[in-house]
Length: 90
Ligand SMILES: [Zn+2]
Image (tube, rainbow, N blue to C red; front, side, top):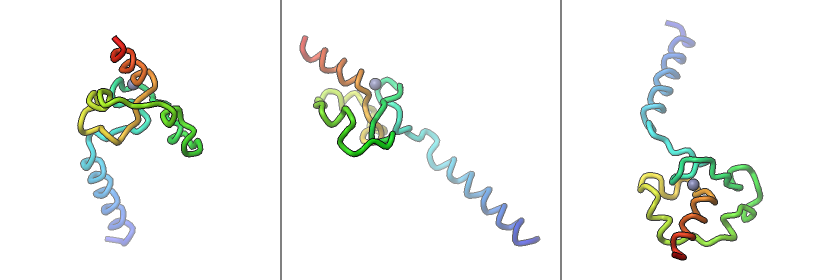
């Protein structure tokens, strides 16, 4: 067997391992609550602190809506933040 063949085999094995490692990987661009694009400015290469989320307050309640395995991995979208705020008013 040549070196190239051996390298290809290793590469294929690594690829399989990577896929197995995270079957339900969290997409940081999607809101963990509604699953829509959260339009986070940090992900789109905007300067730190310019995203809308820096000028809004996140309630305790909204974090409770996020499944444990997604908490801290993806941003909540603006629509969900506003929805939770509306609910609190009532
Ligand atoms: Zn959302």
